[in-house]
Amino acid sequence: MASYECEDASRGLTEMDTPEDVLSAVREAMMADDLDAAEATLRMASKRWSREPEFAIRYARVLSQQGKDKAAFKAYRKVMRKAPERLDACRGAADSAIKVGKGRDAEKLYGRAIGLGLSLDEANAGIARSLTLRNRHAEAWEIALSQFNDSGRKCRELHALMKEMSPIVGAAVPPLNEFDMADVEQTQQEVRRDHLDPILTGQSFDAGSIEAMAGVDKKTLVEDDVQEIENLFDDSVKMGGETSLGIDLSFLDQPSETEENSPQTEEVATRDLDLSEPEDTSQSEVAVETTPAAAETKATAPDDDDPFADWPDL
Image (tube, rainbow, N blue to C red):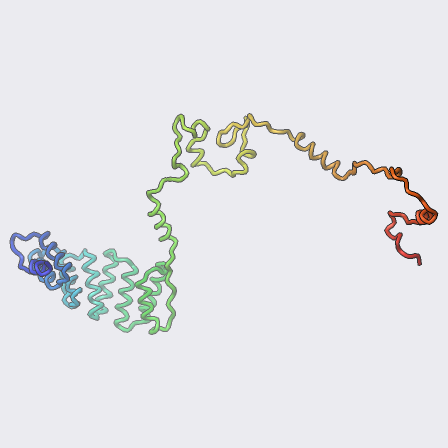
């Protein structure tokens, strides 16, 4: 099957062939890794439809893939004379000029590509490479470093180029910023674009809904500022016993300040008082027989309240 595709792609063009047929044959040849057949087909197509730059650009691109950089550079320059507005032709010519060692032409082409819409990171990386071809390493380092810092240190191409020039100029390469918050926020926004608002999911504010019967509307729930939970039932209570959400709390008995403070005041007043009755120790159910020694001991017994009673007399 592959050989048949290659033979079909390498055959000559006929009057019945259309541009779509040519592109289909080139696609089959590229899938079969037959660059020679694709080159021959595109070369004949670019000659047949000379006013159409698409075939000439594809032809130059195939030449670059084959390693024929000089031929690719000439093919790109030819396209630029016919279609100077094509960015892909200007960029391809600049890249081919770098490969063949034409640094001055590459610098001019990259500068022209900026006007056609090429990003500053790619253009300055190409200009810096063109300067290194002419041994202007210090100037190339300054251009690459300035653009790398201006772009937020996110361009990997500039970072790789500065790694190559670092041993030559003797300067350290700044670190690459791989965690940019703008990219993260953009990624999160793309991921969540199809998700519904979790606050409004499953809620309806039409007449007869639970939210409508509770007096909660969409504007109060979403657009107003979120009230603190602890202030929902005290500070946010309005006149008539209604909260900020329109909930009527008038049926709740609010205790007065006097009733709330009176039990606490009575408790504080009686907390330090000893209201327990003293025990009567004067009488005893059991009579204790007293002896003279016991009476003498009792008479000389020290007072129990004296903490120094058991100390010896000096």
